[in-house]
Image (cartoon, rainbow over all chains, first blue to last red; front, side, top):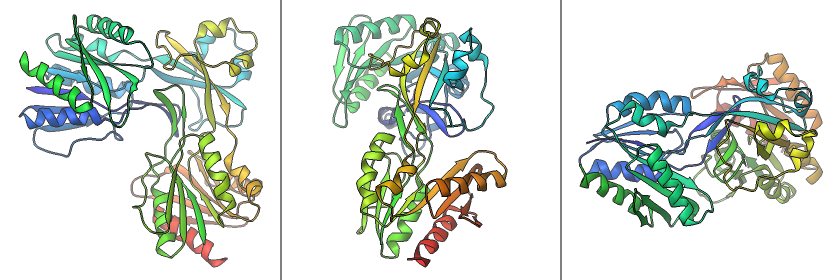
Length: 228
Length: 228
């Protein structure tokens, strides 16, 4: 099979020297890629410069992206040419559009105008005591996947922080339906550390727990293989 | 001599999953640390988890920091116990304090109130079409160094983007005087790429150019040694 995996976290530039970055090591994506490669599948890994990656090897193709715009541009043709997408990348919900100070805010009546302004400086000045950053919502990449390729099998990820497990599963199940995924891996940041990575493989009716990145990768691999 | 070097870039958390990060690889700090170590000096390197670092070796002590608050806390006692500080870290000018949406902005009269609010959610909701992030200025760490230890020799760095060289030198010289540094290394982001790193060693009267990270490190080493 041709397996498409996303990993790492996107970054959105504020200016030439600063970005808003979503934290993600790329470890789980690396483990999944290696598992599919070991079992003879072709893997395309869409990831970031700073994420950990498998060593170069036959069957592996790596594509680097930075922000959500570059992710979308890279992913669309790949989604059309693969049978499975495992979308574990931490994607930026918002992108910076304009940075200003409180003085401009006080003299602005309609704040939506500020969303259409752009900073002219390449490195925004650090003179003011405070800054105000306006951000716009990014497109939800996972919601575009089935538009690009209705036949692709989609495994999504949902990360929440410090919520009851029932809420975590419910949010995952809602994403499952909305994005026509066959599985959402739901995890809570509080359950992730160097030694463990508690995740739940959530489908329409069940939520199967896995305790480590290796176990999450293995269980995803088994699900994908079973219905192959 | 006991040499204190900072490298990499600080990150300021927006919430548990996102940060504003200043880009810096840590390469120059690594090269400088290795050069001083090779010549028999003791080096303390204050850097970040993601920055590149020299291999563990005798004479080298590495301290990890994340945001400006942790940098300040770590640096103060070290500045008091070292003879030289080479402060090449890219330090965040501002830290996020409160994220809201346009609706709250429209109903707020005094925006400075929003600077005292805090988000209660651990991961800020991504429901709104837009977000507005309020940031506060961080303390300028370089301006505290001589308060902590009037006798330390201070080498600072100044990064600008796309400015005429005369302006770059002038801004560096102003930082030199304001912070009582003996040298400011001034560079323009446009002059930095994989093959070159054009920097100017700016003191009161001269600006000596260097074309690579190795050359910048070597020239700093010579200046420090000459007046030892």
